[in-house]
Image (cartoon, rainbow, N blue to C red; front, side, top):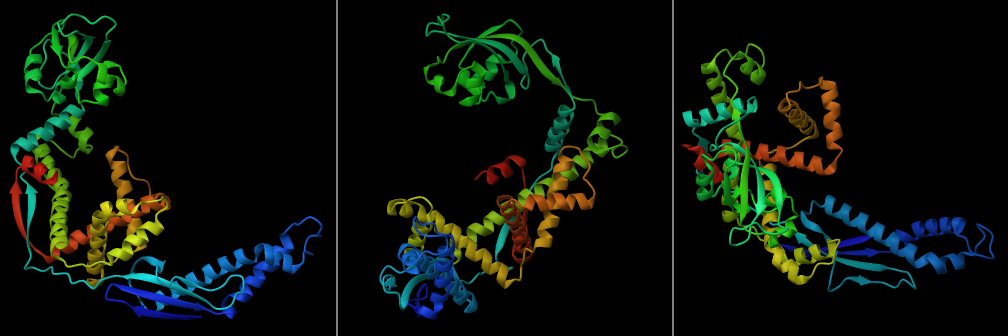
Length: 450
C-alpha cells in the first residue's frame, strides 16, 4: 500500500492510494471461502460448489467491498498519522478518480480530493470592547413579578364587567355583511383572554361590557390568529378562508383572577417553610432571583455580539468547490447544484464559526470532557425537578438518569453544545473588556429579539 499526498494550493490537496494484490487478495480469498461454505446452488452439495463458479458469481462484489474497506481504513490512518486537518471527508477525484481492472485484478489506484482546514488567526483581547447589557431590576419589574407569583396561586372569580386582564366566556354567531345572522353560519361558544387582544380599538370596545352584552367583532382580532382563531370558532384552519370577518359575540360570563394574598401561606408555597417572613423579604428575594435569571440572558447577548464580531472580522477562506462536491456526494437525498448554491452561504457561515470556535478551544486548552458533561446533565435534571416543585433524587439515581439521557445521541449533542457554549461565554467574559450597561426590561427584550 502506497499513499502519496499532493498539495494543489493552501486549501486543496489530493491523496493517491496505490493498492497491490497483496494488500487485498488474502481478505478476498477468505470471504470467497465463506461464500463457498454458505452458498446454495442447485445441483451442488453445500460446501462443494466449484471455486470458479463462486468467484464468477461473487468475486467482483467481494473484491469491490474489500478494496473499499482497505482503502478507507488506510486513508483515515494516513490522515490521522500525518495530522492532516480536513473539512468533511475525502471524495473521489473528478479528474483522476480510479484506475484498475476488476476482470483482471492487479494494482488499483484511487485518487481522492481533500478540502483542507484553513489557518486562521483569532484577534480577541482586552483591546476588544463589548457592551454587557443587564436588565435594570426596578420597582415596576418587581411589581410585575410579584403579581405573577400571586396570580399563580390565585383563584378565578366571577366579575360584573370586563377588565384589561379578564377572561370572557361568550357565544359567537356568524353574521352577514349587513349584520344579520348568517343562515347555517357558525354558532360556537368559546373563551377569549383580554390580555391577548392586541387590537386597541377592539380592546377598548370590550372593556366595561357586562354579561348579556352583545358586541360585533372580527374573530381574528380577539384571538392569536390561525389555529387559535379556528379553535375559538370550532372550525378547521382550512375553513377560515370562507368564514366571515363579522361575528356577534354575546358575553355569557366574565372571569377574573383574584390574586393570592401576601401572607405566610403564600411565602411558604413559593419558597418553602420559614424562608420568607414578610413582603419586604419577598421583594428582596424576587429582585435577587430576577438578577440571577437575567445573567444567562445577558451572557447570551454578549456571546452573540462576540460571535457577530468574529464572523465579520476573522478571515477564513474555504475550499468552496470541494465542499460543494462533498455536500452533494454525502447528502442522503438528491440535491441539485442550484440548491447547493442557494444554501451554501449559510452552510459556509456555520462551518466558519465551527473553525473559529475550534481554534479558540485549541489555543486556550478549553475542553469538554465526559465527566463534566455528566455533572452538567445532572444539574439540568435537578433544575427540571425544581421547576415542578419536586426534590432531586439521591446522587446515585441522578447519575444513572443523566447517563440514560446521554445515551440519546441527539440529546447528548445538544448538551455538549450547551456546555461548550457556556465555556466559550466564560472565556469571552474573561478575555474582552466589558462595558456594563443597565437597560430597561423592554429594551433588553428588543435587543434579544433581533
